[in-house]
Amino acid sequence: MRKIRVLVVDDSALVRKMVSDALSEDPDIEIAAVAANGKIAIQKVTQCSPDIISLDVEMPEMGGIETVKEIRKTHPKLPIIMFSALTERGGMATLEALGAGATDYVTKPTSADGGVAVRELIKERLVGKIKALVRFGSGSSSESQTLPSAARRAGIIAQPRIVAIGVSTGGPNALAEMLPMIPAGFKLPVVIVQHMPPVFTKALAERLDTKCKLRVHEAAQGMTIEPGNIYIAPGDYHMELRRVAARVEVLLQQGPQENSCRPSVDPLFRSAVQVYGAHVLALILTGMGQDGLRGCEHVHAAGGQILAQDRASSVVWGMPGFVAQAGLAEKVLPLSAIADEIVRRAW
Image 1: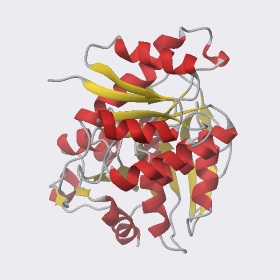
Image 2: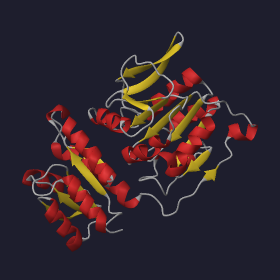
Image 3: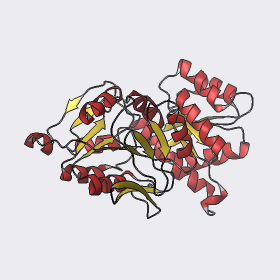
Image 4: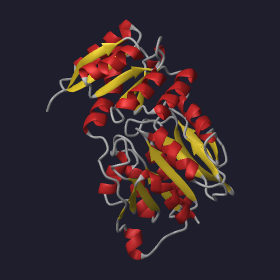
């Protein structure tokens, strides 16, 4: 198998070298070219035919967002990973770049990373995504598939009282497409774990709130879960649900990572089952890894319902693929069909 060719784009010569050196240490990756701004990057795409691009968000002459838009005119499927600063401005710009067609993002190392070698952090954050996006991305055809889950075979379907969603790579765009399709007056609360760092989850909630017919919040400690509202777990906190008297509220905690993630999908799904039992409608969308698989096992054992996004419409069919292949999903659906299915099951 030939090496994955990466185009590294950043206005800082030091960052270009650090990223190039870090990626070159992996035997499956080689640097196709480097570029100091978007204009040069567009030329390099034509000249070098990279398999994937690592792209800085803020650059002179042509910034990352404009560069994404230009590349998408000629290369609609070329994976682009935004290399973003962990700041409020960086979070907003990254979401704008994703909306313009970028595939995913990673955050640049900061002083808050505790002195861990910068090169090692870059490798940790970039290499896995590069390999997943180039070699294990989505398929070529979209299909719906109904699977004979234990609950369906027994004819037992509990009315959902909450929708719980887990999502990772490709998630911001998937949520921005799917959630606005849920109509005003939807009777259930929606709780979401999107793998994202602090600051970015707040920006995501604010961005989705402008697009959706339901109110979207970054969840806070003790917040009451109310019908017709959407709650997104804040970065670096596991989000759980707990019943306090007649209400259900958010519990945030910084326990150990699960599936190398915090927030993780599994704690949310487990707690949802503890509060709502069989009345959970779980949804696993596009993402790397298998976070959500164990949580879905809890939902399934309790008699709840589980949906998964299909391979063709997923940026990476990791999380939904594990759930589907384990026989836990009642239906595997293209992203465009999921909102209607949620509404149909809720009402």
